[in-house]
Length: 60
Image: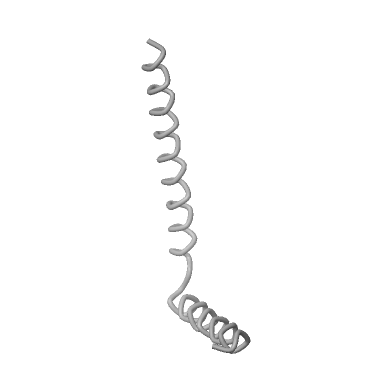
């Protein structure tokens, strides 16, 4: 009987984890959906520039 209680608790914890992950993904998706294509492009260009400057600073 004791073992089945542990499995039940682990199952409930797993379901809670899946629900929390889904909520985080949905929130991130909503945030990205609000961006215009120009904003996405500008962010990507900024990320490339930041990565390049880090590589230059590291001597790569």
